Image 1 (cartoon, rainbow, N blue to C red):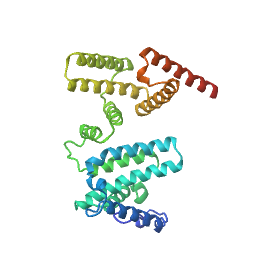
Image 2: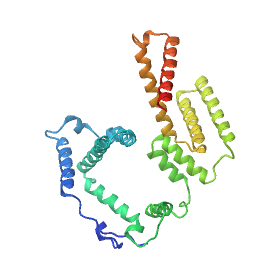
Image 3: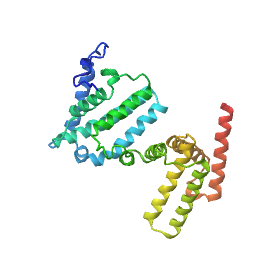
Image 4: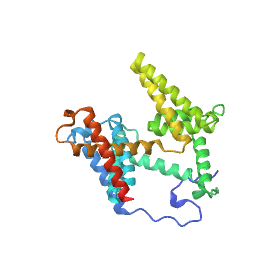
Length: 293
């Protein structure tokens, strides 16, 4: 397989080279890098930025990624621009910290991912043919496996890949990915009724753990319930992340209407009164939807 080792514009793929990047765009990126370096200056930088580590910033990376997704789904182009900027900030800040350790910098990151994209797209930058998304994906996985230099004795094993999913992905997404790969390999139920049986079994085990076992065991059983419910989602071609996000939004929408009905702190109402507020909120939302339809 031929893979170029030079720049994109030097790839002999029969296409005209792409124009160079805008000097203004590169200048803005350089300005951002300089600002982050200034904030991390040990002599007169920002105390908060100086206190950060790659580990302490991890929650922000995840949070900003989710906010990008939300902006793409629900926001304006300006919202997307802003959230992508916040995510870029996390990349540049992480790169600065590792640069200070003498390990790599933003240029190394950019070079590495650029070379990876060229290497994994030989149908664009070399002489491989791939005319459908499925063919591109098959090439990608083959090249990726070769890059990992897998031991021939273990190259066909699925568990290392599943371990990567479990470690690197958000839990719901990781569970869906793991179960799909395992099912494709034959680790699957015969029908949906068997999947429901597994859900019921796990719920019973969770109830028993809550009644008699340690918090650690309870957490384990709760995770098993979630995992079994994700199998229902997979069988029904449902997106569990979107489903839960939808529930979160509906709860907030209903809660807003509950608060609108209250004339004092919610804690001052009885459970029965709050339930009445909740039912009325649901009715109001359903009526509004019916009128909009």
